[in-house]
Length: 103
Image (spheres, rainbow, N blue to C red):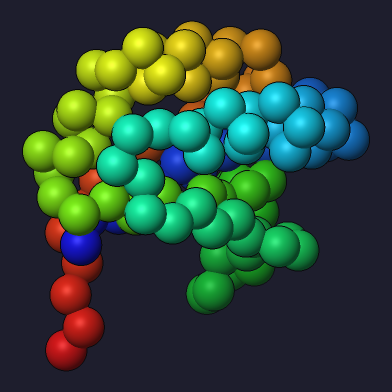
């Protein structure tokens, strides 16, 4: 299993971010080819040790493999999803990918 984390910085307008994100961006992103699961954080996202709040929201997208992620990102839906970030992510977004396993 491969996870992609989208960590959204604090937006200029949190209410506008949430409205656009859940009404427009999520429905688009959920059509990414090969997407297995889409999860989002709820409530405050805080640093465990210092209580900082560098992120407004974290989304976790699950795929079968790194190749599936690359195929999704290269698809027309993936390109549209990436381009859509400029429409609402005023606090910036950091995207990371990693393989995941239970131990």
